[in-house]
Length: 137
Picture (cartoon, rainbow, N blue to C red):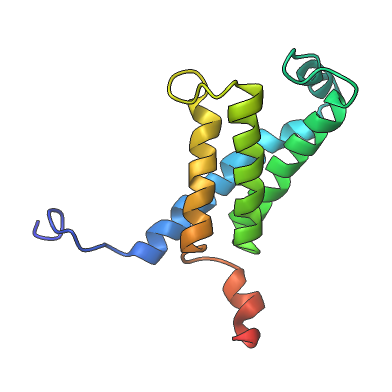
């Protein structure tokens, strides 16, 4: 009971790792739409995206979500995946959604904030960054 009301962290690296894995899986889920050409054309027809490069922007955005999600899910190149997430989700929040993150477009904004979290903290436990970069330390 004492730990519950304490300000000391409880298994912080493992908790951070579990949140990163769930977050990465959600990003992969949202990014897998890149494999649905009809849905991608529908997104490209939105007023905020439509134009000469609309379809390219949609594919770049969804592809970025998918790749960033895989990187975060596996915990490899975590900060690169975080930067991809921050960039993509900030673009969606402020350009596609018009910056209305306080009531309409909270979802992409929260994804950008989670990207910031992993940029600053690293992957936590259960990651491949440790395996890949262990020899370089």
